[in-house]
Length: 193
Image (cartoon, rainbow, N blue to C red; front, side, top):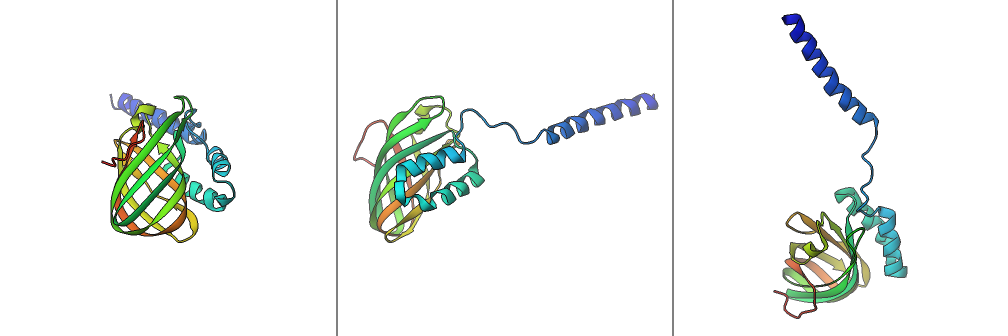
């Protein structure tokens, strides 16, 4: 009886460790077909941002190292301003690999130690988007700005397991940090709430 139990335990251990060893030797999992690679995002960003895009590759690489490959991205422009309380408005296009492209608008309030005004070309990396309709909700987060003439900034906003990472190339004077949200809508609206 003990011999049978030992053989059974040995067989179980070999099958578990053998499967783990085979999985470890096979390398990283294959790239999903519904996500975008870092090179694709950087290429789209260079075409969109133009000559301002020197720091884009560094910001994109930081986002990819932190969150991986996005399954969507938005290219657009936005403007905003703040003096303790702020507003932000923008519009662009959501690109996905297999669910089509869609026009989006966003607006949102903020409050915090923030002052100034800016206009920005914006790329937003979108993670865990189950369907294009899921973009139309409020994404909350903390934003920080520190540029005087131009540069890139990155923040992260989340809602219902979907993550939106705006990467902005701003022009203007803006300094501070704030708490707020972005509301994505199908049509442009002045109401940030």
